[in-house]
Length: 183
Ligand code: XMP
Ligand code: MG
Image 1 (spheres, helix red, strand yellow):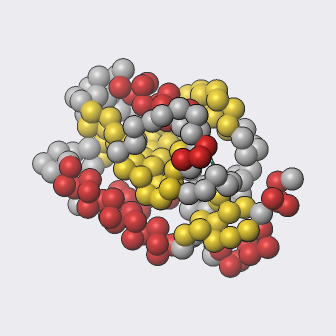
Image 2: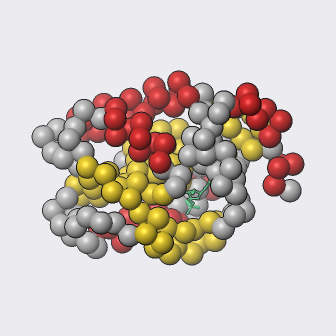
């Protein structure tokens, strides 16, 4: 689905599919340089990171493996609950692995700071983070994120994996959700 298909539900368009793909390629080149000769394990956080993972992993010219976790930090609304629960754990043993957490967005940072600590305790050789979007103005905790795609304003955004109440994940681009949709 295109952003133009749901124009009435958007306040603005943030990034087109092409801009997102260019950014993902840019990050992939950095990761290839940083992980030369290694085989990182990409850990995607369901469900938001599905699109980023699909595009980033295929762009990457490294023998990377993939695994998935599902955690809950948000209900069906637009505010962070601050509570993190594992809904689906990894299948992989992290001992000695170079882990890259692949995330759609960092809002308060609560989810990722918790996840980072959780994965570090499992014996990984290294754990770094790639988040496609970050909202600096929403940060409640500082998280050391090695790779950030775009820094965005503190608005609720949808598309490219990001949902509102499970809708809009299948949008090719990313836009700001109009308040009339959720108020
Ligand atoms: P925290 O606050 O813990 O939240 O950093 C991270 C998770 O919250 C979701 N999130 C959003 N989802 N549009 C969305 O569709 C947004 O603007 C947004 N902000 C946060 C997302 O699941 C992320 O992993
Ligand atoms: Mg997410």
